[in-house]
Image 1 (tube, one colour):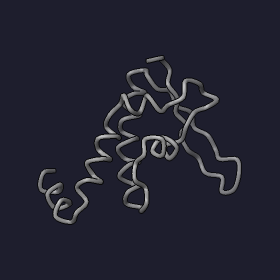
Image 2 (cartoon, one colour):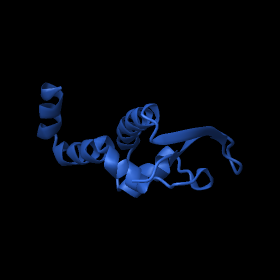
Image 3 (cartoon, one colour):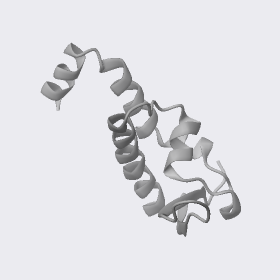
Image 4 (tube, one colour):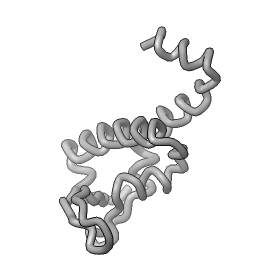
Length: 105
């Protein structure tokens, strides 16, 4: 991992990667942007936007999505977050997970 990070540093991407890791791995920050109700549940993209993660390129989005997914799975396993599979109603009808907090801070 250190060698991979060093390679990214040489390419000038260190700050962006560090920012994504910090936000995506900080479970308190994730909980802070999640709604308290199922009716207001957010998608991964909405959570990433609320956290201010960079998603200008496809690679940015994949990195953010992987880290957020991992953190959200852990939070769900611990009972702090719940999720529901939903299908987008408008436009292209794809399936996604919607997340919300199950306990107050």
